[in-house]
Image (cartoon, rainbow, N blue to C red; front, top):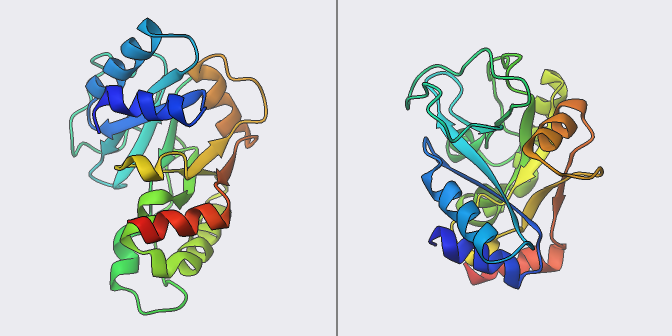
Amino acid sequence: MTPLEVVGHTRAAGRRYLAITDHNTTSGAVEARTFAKATGDDVTVIVGMELSTADFGHVLVFGEGVEDDWGWKSLMPMPRNLPDGWVAIQAHPFRDLVKRALPGPIKFDLPDLPPSISAIERWNGNDLLSKSPDRRADLDEASLSYIAAQGRTAVASSDAHRAVSMHAYHTVFPKPVRSVADIAAQIKSGDACPGSASEAELAEIRTSW
């Protein structure tokens, strides 16, 4: 999907917020934000980036100015200090482990997260709908255990690469969101929580893949 198509699908679904996190770049997200602003006021695009880190795999980062050149390069270690108002999320921590694990509880010994990572994905749509749909329960159990052990906020992401899975999994913000700083604050405070489409809708998405 192109950035403009992603905005179009968001509008068609009646959604107001869209977060875009491409690997190690914000160019697509910025293009989508520019297009959304130029063509209406009904969709707010949250610009983020999915860092490919050397020590913690994929980490989502959001914050005012994340689209600027702040020194990030692919496969650098995860930054231990982020600007005020930014937030980082550990993405799909069990994606590779589940591929090697036998059916049943996933045994893991993941490293403790640095303080700069405030949240962990409980649900990742790419894992649950496409890559490992038969391991949904195992992934959820492992994610909840890791989230509790690390004392982090649980969130969710569609990680959509196709229109059919956009917004299938998402993060719910109970307080008004007027800026990316509001998003960061609600994640850091633990007010944000994971959300999803209905089980019937998720089943339909899985069968259409």
